[in-house]
Image (cartoon, rainbow, N blue to C red; front, top):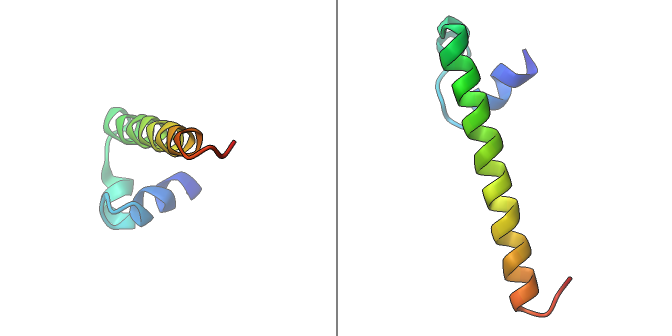
Length: 54
């Protein structure tokens, strides 16, 4: 349920829409969110390094 709420908060649909997804689509969205978060974290870390912050 927490993962579904996370997807709703990220704008992927309402809770009812997320709960209606089949397992493959649900897991694809979860994987997409994880990859997106890792990319964002990497970009933030790179920007900090470029500005001399560690």
